[in-house]
Image 1 (cartoon, rainbow, N blue to C red):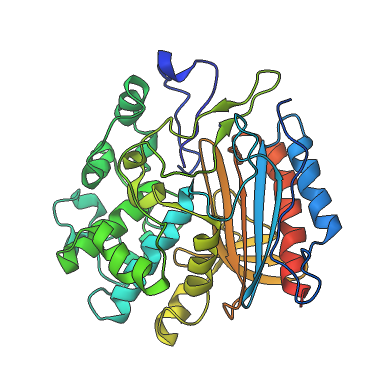
Image 2 (image 1 turned 90 degrees about the vertical axis):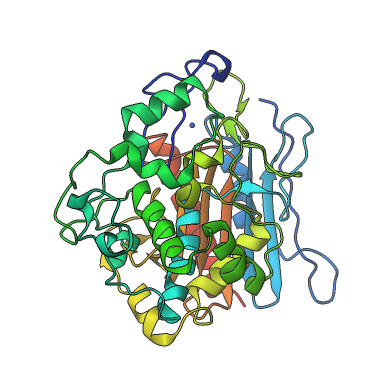
Length: 398
């Protein structure tokens, strides 16, 4: 996903190195905790050790101003928060806050494409040449399967100098998302399709274009018809502009000793579209991942393809435990068991959504600052440790 270096304030423009692909960054109130009531006593069901983990995360100098984690088991959701979702007001994060879900949007494109496979309108062996013949001929052999698993070799358009220059000049620039691949149209494939793994934002742009090609419908409408409505997602959307629906979890650039800078609306979503532009809430993100990672959304045959994993290939940023890449989904093998999910990072946000294979339990974990392997790697390591503890609570809890 995109990264945003501080150095120079947005109003003076971004440096060319400030926006690059990582695969698409004092004032705190006392830690807050909130949760659904227990069955009898009316009090929250909170694991004090997990709460302390969140408290320590936001207390770090380079840590996020706030964090919210939802543990859902069946019809019960326990909500853990620490810090603030808005520094200006001191308001804690809330399960219905809108937020940028970053590269978890790639799982949504997978949900659309794989349902079209179930309907017989797409095949995992369909190629760019067959469905998108106007794309560069050297890309024509790339299949839908390879795009979904990031083994396509497509160059990442978010690293293209012209793309970066446009964002530097106007971070709110509204791109035509259907032409984003034009920024790398003159580039060869990075490797022979299917031979290697390379996380690329270009992949899921191509997936969305393929879905449009076989249906004649806009990708935004396909999301509504195949994902939002069936799953009851009423606060999830794919905007083109930079503004977030209210209320929202504010995202910050945290670079001590400077005060955190609110960059929630610093960049427009059209720059990442199907690869990272979706806005959702912690509650709705959990509902989505339980359906997409569980057995209810796809046929058994298509799900078997979805869950054919490449060991060692990670989401961006890496999720908890040992990672393996499926089709627009990742396997996280933790010390306590296996989850399926996706992660994402975008200026102001780092996200994880994961579910048990049976789709009955889920974890969403959202912090309001960006971290990745190239942006605050030490913070990412600490974050993954905390996420694994929450994963264990999910897998072991009753």
